[in-house]
Amino acid sequence: MQIKFGTDGWRDLIAENYTFENVHRVARGAAMYFKKHDKAKAGVFVGYDGRFLSREFAELSARVLAAEGLKVFIANSVVSTPATSLAIVKKKLAGGVMITASHNPAQYNGYKIKGYYGGAALPEIVDEIQKDTNSEENRKHTLKHSSEMPSFDEFVKSKKIQEIDAKGIYLKELARLIDLEKIKRSKIKIAYDPMYGANVGCLETLIPDAAILHNVWNPGFGRTRPEPLPDTTKEISKYVVQNRSDIGLVTDGDADRIGAIDENGEFFSSQMILCLLLQYLVEVRKKRGSVIVSQSVTSMVDKMCAKYKLKVIRTPVGFKYITKYMLDGNVLIGGEESGGIAIPGLHIPERDGLYNGLLLCEICAHKKKSPSELIANLEKEYGPHKYDRYDFHTTHEQKAAVLAKAAKGFDTIAGLKVKSVDKMDGYKFNLAGGAWFMLRASGTEPLLRYYSEAPTMAMVKKILAFAKAL
Image (tube, rainbow, N blue to C red; front, side):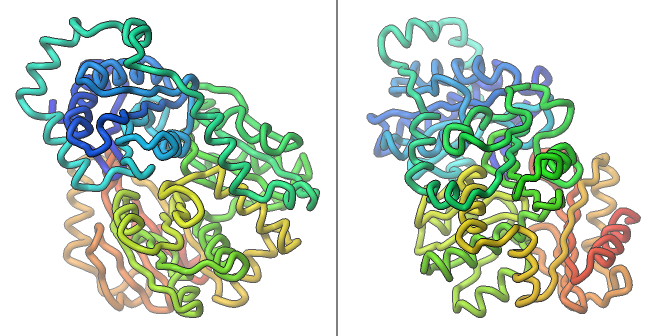
């Protein structure tokens, strides 16, 4: 089979296509790239989440990388994607890999490639690794040598593979970056849901009195997908109210995305989290720089940057596109609508759910305001920006039919005149009254994603109803 990388690495169904043989092929494709890197002698890092067989897939990857002559460091326990990226930077390595399917359902696993800078591999790196992975030479090598490699224990004994405490490195860095004392002095009550994922056992080391839900590793993720969205965060919403917490934080399966619940148990969009972080960085931390956001990010960002006189750059969906800009210039913040946010001037050029969640708590502590009050203040200044997304699981035939309709275009959508169309990534229809509708095909799953923003949630729902009827 041909292995295809999506917006953020390769993901597939465990046992169907995500097999030890195919992981071997991808690992060797990665090894061929890292062997040519300027920092190849320093080695590479392998991290893994708590999904089914992730440790075993990680050990296989480490063996393949070591068999190609690379020094390999591997996490000694389950770690988040940002912890993997940070370990690469702290150890000054050529890069690394993370075994995770991020927010995908439990039946998936995946393979993320990380650069030496501690962030998503750039598109050209991913393309090179994908090409090598699918080469005939790679296929033949995998079949011939998979049973001939030394065992994991043999590589460890020879010190060609070394285990390190990447989780400890990560938590120590968060303690340095976040004003934990300000948060503690404020008496803010924090609830946290790691969604049975990679950040289980993390927050309590930084905020000992935090109330934590689903704080055990569960490869089945409690029969829900580990993605912080309104329909997957109902338990933490109730928990916040019952526990009388001031804020609820949620991270996805590999903890690079952030979601949040206000003091009333209401989910508030990661679009608003991005805006609150931007406001705090500029007005309180006195930081400057470009703002890099994907096509599906709220237009409130554009209004804020106009006020702050900051440059805004839009990219296709996929953090690797944002990463490219973060490496090329002075970037203040980069973000996606899905809760992936990076602040490269303060941290690594990587999404980090827990870091961003704690920074949100720091904002509440500094301003002495609740999350709902912070959002109300944003809306008072920039106007209401309501947002929602709908994932349409479909067939290839249905998907093609919907995309064909979008390509022809629409005069109106949900009664709103179409003012312009942007085809950077899928189709984004800018509508009258400041609303917009966007649709694109997922890079990792058989589905279409519909996005919408409007001044009222009623209008958002009306636009999405139009989309569902296509």
